[in-house]
Image (cartoon, rainbow, N blue to C red; front, top):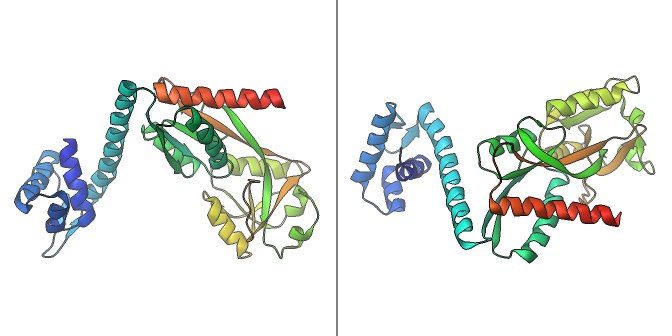
Amino acid sequence: MELRTLHYFTVVARELNITRAAEKLNMSQPPLSNQIKALEGELDVQLFIRGKRHLELTEEGALLLRRAVQMQELADKTRQEIASLREGMTGTVYLSMVEGRAPFLAAQWIAGFREEFPLVRYNLWNGSSDDVLDRLRKGLADLAVIAAPYDSEHLEGFLVGREPWAAMLHPDHPLAKEPGDIPLSSLVGEPLIVPSRKSRVEAIRRWFGEIGAEPQILCEMSNYMDAVALTSQGVGVSIFPQTVEVSNGLVVSKAVTRPARQAEYILVWNKGQAPTGLTREFIHYVQDCLEERQSKA
């Protein structure tokens, strides 16, 4: 499969109309139809169900669309990396990260890195730990910021930040009106909204187990804003890392103590794949920032 043919296919798959796709590609309709038919012949599958007025993707077509988008992204990234090697410290840093404190850490790094390398660009992507790591494995990200623990067998990485675990509460919840932090025991019996990552759920169960209790988990989810939305409607109490930079009138955030726990954020990359010049320079910059912060502590 040629990248050009995949580009043609992607446009047709998004338009679901040969005429519109041909106009978008600035080419005539017959050659485009022939390209798609040739691609189906090469793969020995039907990619589209052809109706009188529009097309519909088959299951195989939908799979190819997902893969075609990933391959084109990877090709663009490769071209930029080669240009970076040729022209000096330019190119794009592809960074995927989880929610919480990670975007604020990345923002600090980028602000400082730009002062030294103003021609560098950035492609940031945010999602759950599983989605972030999937992009890293597929080569769609150079680096990722994830929550510990991490797979040290397949990933290189180091600690870049910590923040306490906290309870997000509806403003009218009795615990929201309590001064200061709240003990973990005060959440026993509360319907809880927790991160969906398996290691996180297990850690929360062990946490409650230390005080001889079992968490009443109502909902598991990967998206921080979904948890905020449910909490703001009084559905339950969310347990997520406390991001102190976020000011949100919809919920009240209180650190959970007695016993307290901290979430750790790790900057990782694929083990066995030496970072490119630009990525390596960015990693060194982050390490220098951490050493400077530690020396001032």
